[in-house]
Image 1 (cartoon, one colour):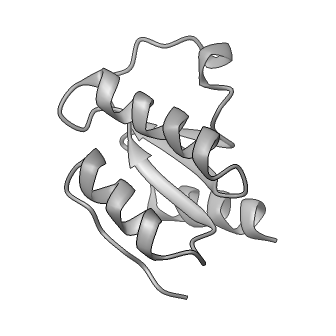
Image 2: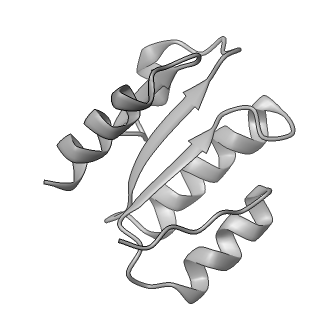
Length: 92
């Protein structure tokens, strides 16, 4: 399994455009603003529908139904095992 890291939404999109085998994206809702993380997830859902999305955040004001474009939401702080469990359930 290969992992890629991107420091912002623009770089994440660049990685996705050059790495066609990506199956899962984990992103914080709060990249530089709440809107950036959410907009990134929505863009990925629209452009790359097969990519599964896990969202995380310690400060979020979204209703769960507003996050329907992601497979999982994991509030921070979270134990690493919670993230691993989500990854396993999505990628099986």
